Image (cartoon, rainbow, N blue to C red; front, side, top):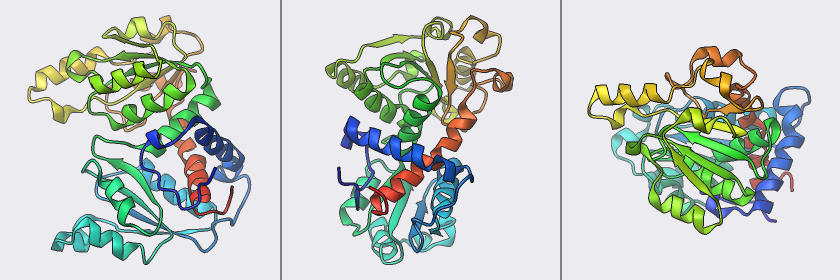
Amino acid sequence: MRFKDLDIISMKDFSRDMIDHILDTAEKLEPIANGEDKSGILNGKILSLLFFEPSTRTRMSFETAIKRLGGDVLSLGAVDASSIIKGENLTDTIHVIEGYADAIILRHPKEGSAKMASEISSIPVINAGDGAGHHPTQTFLDLYTMRRESRLDGVKVAITGDLKYGRTVHSLCYALSLYNADITLVSPKELRMPREIIRDLKNRGIEVKQTDSIEEAIQNVDVLYVTRIQKERFPDPAEYQRVSTSLQITAELLKNANPELKIMHPLPRVNEIDPDVDFTPHACYFRQSFYGVPIRMALLSLIMGTVE
């Protein structure tokens, strides 16, 4: 498997063997991620962060990842403080930045932007989210979380929230199809998973169930993956309120859950998980957030050719 100079754009580009190698590499690097060990394997390397949308975890975990390995970060900063505000297009920005750094991390509101950037860039591009398209590094850390906290091969997963527009769950479902996952989709009819994704999953031999009952879903699954319902998608505030509260996860609700159930969330959360859940043995979303560091350390080390 050759990872050096590889672009990370979509989970569809990765085989199970490739994903397993990335997860194995992350596990080896985890002691460095949590500060137990030190490493300089990315000493002298510079990572460029181009974020055209807000981010906390993705941006900061990439910064932490390269700094833990001895490298440094070059950040675009606020868009309105850059030449973008003067009308510079993305193509020109990529051509400029490729002369400054060893890899580019791009988050952009337009679907397909990361693919376009990878086609013109002479250095590797990692997609950190492109509109409603893909968010592959989130998926890698989600898979790693399942492997560390529950199980991955044959995992039973219930995915709830905004399944129509959520790029996180789109990428995750494709990846889970490589691990013989049993997938249950829980959402209001307005936010159901796009039909083409369900069709693709079924063509891959994956059983997909759909329901609007969260109580039913959590009884027999290993992992509950919760996502935020996006208020901005609802023209009627009352309808948003009805939908968002119907899927809220509470400590009371979890009394009937599988005792081994693990709850994940890509964050940020709004009201879809009650804070009382944080104190249950089911909650692992904050550990999930940390796992983004070893995963992104692994990806950076592999594409820059400092590990194999």
